[in-house]
Figure 1 (tube, rainbow, N blue to C red):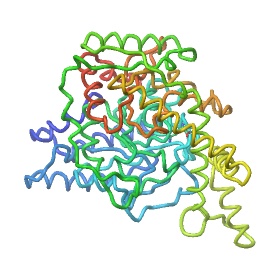
Figure 2 (cartoon, rainbow, N blue to C red; figure 1 turned 90 degrees about the vertical axis):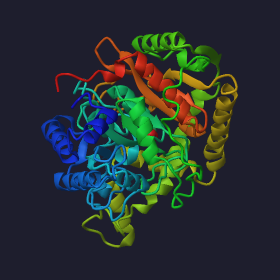
Figure 3 (cartoon, helix red, strand yellow; figure 1 turned 135 degrees about the vertical axis):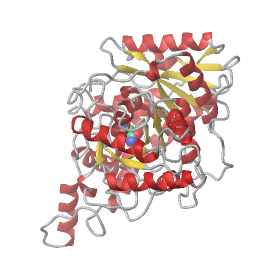
Figure 4 (cartoon, rainbow, N blue to C red; figure 1 turned 180 degrees about the horizontal axis):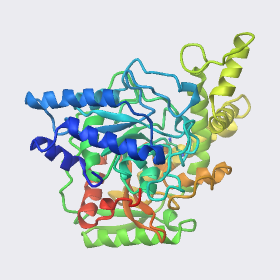
Amino acid sequence: MLDHTLRSLSTLLADGKASSVELCRDYLARIQALNPTLNAFITVDADKTLAEADAADARRAAGQAGPLTGVPIAHKDIFCAEGWLTTCGSKMLANFVSPYDAHVIERFKAAGMPALGKTNMDEFAMGSSNETSYFGPVKNPWDSSRVPGGSSGGSAACVAAGLAPAATGTDTGGSIRQPAALCGITGLKPTYGVVSRYGMIAFASSLDQGGPMARTAEDCAWLLNVMAGFDARDSTSLERAQEDYTRDLTKPLAGLRIGLPREFFGEGLSGDTARAVEAAIAQYRKLGAETVEVSLPNSSLSVAAYYVLAPAEASSNLSRFDGVRYGYRTPEYKDLTDMYEKTRAEGFGAEVKRRIMIGTYVLSHGYYDAYYIQAQRLRRLIANDFAEAFKACDVILGPTAPSTAFRLGEKADDPVQMYLSDIYTIAVNLAGLPGMSLPCGFDGQGLPIGLQLIGNYFGEARMLNVAHQYQLATDWHARAPQGI
Ligand code: GLN
């Protein structure tokens, strides 16, 4: 099971060598055996999964199967799924059963892909280690004393450990790419607006984007074909012709210009990560690509800009959790104000409260110009840097994260250190560009290292081509953690 890709599972089903019900049973058994250790899932509901698998088998028998019909997938618990507990990793929603499906969930249902369950995540997707989840931290399958990254840590861990062949994630500042890197899998954050945010619980609406997490770039391309598409219910969803993201996978890389940002290769990069990324660059040269040095002079300010803008948006988005309509409500209160205060004091964890306070502060009268407007200006400069860089290259390459998986608790008390885990990923969200992470080696302790690719707007197909060609030439993505 560990080494199955979506392609191999699709073939098994098409050849009649396995049914969807059989596949789902196998994965559910593996979840039952390993989830107590990994804590990658918040909710598993075998009856629901098997009913969906049964329907997929019937659809195949009727000759109406698509390529992924019957192949199961796990969903980050940020996506509303009808009839499923949808917690967003928070006590605030620990009792919330969604009455409707997110657009992304509708899409996977339409493709006939049964849901294996809802994966653990940092509370409201705020974190880089999965330690802020109300449901406890997820463990990294490569070393259970370490974090899987975050906020899509449950999705990354379950794919790495073979508990699911693929999973959905969301990325506001790195939450698909950074856990993909720390768990040794492949993950893609699309161009802002390509995947609908309808039914995806909002953190920072101008940055949030859903995307696929799987073992290979080819699998991510298949999944993006399912996920992407216009949706009138999300006002930032882009009305574009449907693309086939697999169309360029097999193109040779001769003539490809890879941009290497000077700022990504300076101090702060650990030795093993730097070596692995250098080796990947050498591999790309062998594949016919040329490299050019580019510069992203404002990228060092991306973390600062993000930690003004994302909390500002979060403070507004999270005001809806007030104990009135749904979710947690404090059991005892004097009056309405008291109810609001106690509900929010008890329902949110420390990191979420920190973000709400920062966000409210930077938006308040007198500070708005000094912080929020300045951060918006920086955001423009950061996007301009990328536009300039893409004049000289087709794709940008660098590390995904400054270090490999760190120990549980190591950065939990130091928010700034935690925030710096996303130093290489955040600028991509601020600019709205597509980015991905793919495995490119291991450090001295056997922990996976991620390589980041950044594409130009709507450059997903090209970026997937660049990733796929690397995966044809290397086998880092095929390694699976032992000993779990
Ligand atoms: N780690 C970043 C944060 O805590 C990014 C999270 C994300 O992409 N959802 O905000």
